[in-house]
Structure formats: structure tokens, C-alpha cells
Image 1 (cartoon, rainbow, N blue to C red):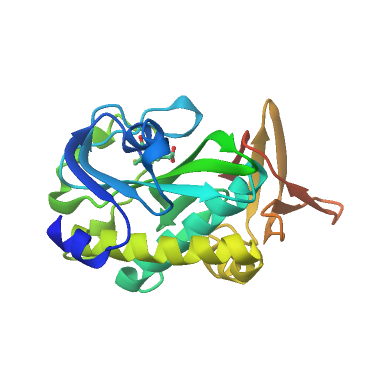
Image 2: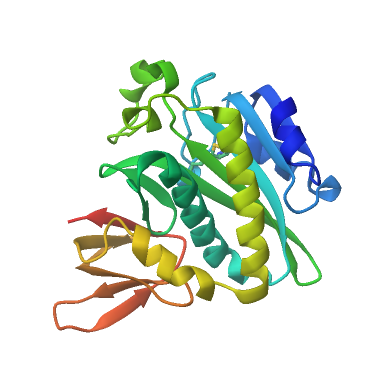
Length: 255
Ligand code: BTN
């Protein structure tokens, strides 16, 4: 904790052993927060995933982090912001894994074609045009592999950072993530998604692959072609048309 606070001087960093959900903790304190303030926990008793799912959060072996950001461009920019967060986490982890970490639109991280980490961006309230945003990041580190028994309860295959890296210093990793996120989000506020689009293409796990999109009850198949400047997913249909898809209720699956 002291180490994290030593390196991140201009923000509040809250580190607790046990929290219900680091996102919830930050959501409840928004009036007192400034952009970049961050909360970390060793264990979450009610960790949240996307679409109302639970995020299983065993003690002491993973990373659960939430950062507050006041987004002056307003809620519509949150999609771009969440893509930027994925890019930054992937790039930071890639310093440890020689480029093996990939992104899956809109905001999962993959290692060896399996999910390694998830991002949950929650928006609340507005002050003028600005939106208050909590960026939640859960990374499966798997140190000591003491979360293995609970993997059976998760209905997809999972990867851990420990599959690729021998020892992981979670405090140093947290400092690197916090600093990189602050820098990137500051750039995003000034210039939007454009400085990041090429970086996304470098990391896209499904680029050029045959995928299907689940949109409500519809299934659309095609070849994944990356993202556009707005952060929409580009899908090439059988007739060669490339269609952009954006929105919160779309899931991407390998075909
Ligand atoms: C997903 O469904 O893939 C997103 C998972 C996000 C989990 C993180 S862990 C830290 C933060 N606090 C939460 O309750 N959820 C996010």
C-alpha cells in the first residue's frame, strides 16, 4: 500500500482487504472523488460483472481495481473510454507477457484465446455535460493458483497471468496500471479515440476471424474487421459490406 501511495502522489488511493465491490464503493463516494482516484481490494464479497453477472473474487490472488473519472465529453464518450481502458490494460500486461495479451471488443482481455480479465464501466449522474464514470478492472492473476477450485463455477474457460509469468508483483502492476490509465484518459479527453485506433488493431484477438454477434435474439455472422473512429465494431458480411455495430447489448463470439 505504501508503495502504491509513494508513486501515485496526486490521487487518493484506497486499499482495503475486503470490499463488497470496488465499483460500488467508488459509486457511493463520487462527490468526494477526483479523476484518477482509485480503490483496490484483496477480496470482493459482491464483485460485479457485466450484464448483472457476478464477478467471482477470491482473496489475495487477483487484481480488483476501480478508478473514478469525470468525463467532460459526457456519457456518449463512455464506449470509446472503455476501449481505451482495454488497450491500456493489455499494453501494460504485455510488458510482462511478450505481447500475448489481446483485446476482445468491447472490453475483455484475452490470453491464449481464453478470458483473462474483464472491464465494467459504470456511469452515474451528470454535472453539466460531464458524466461521472467508474472504471472497474478485474484481472485473473492466479498467483498460487488458489482460485482454481472456483473456476469450475465459471461457465467459460479462463486464463491466468500466472500461466505465462512466473512471479507477479501486484503492487507494482497496480502502480503501472493506474499511471498508464491516467495518462491515456487525459489524452482521450483531449483527442478522443483517434490516437488509440491503430493500437487497438495491434491487439485485436479476433481481427480477420470469423465471428458471430449476438444482438438481443439475433445472431449476425461475419468476419471481424476491427473498429472505426467511433469505437464501433466492424463486421464484414457475406456480400462484402462492412457494417459498424455499437451498443451495450452486443456480444462477440468466435464462430
Ligand atoms: C466483466 O463482466 O467481464 C467485467 C468484470 C469487472 C470486474 C471488476 S473487479 C473490480 C471492479 N469491481 C466490481 O465489482 N467489478 C469490477
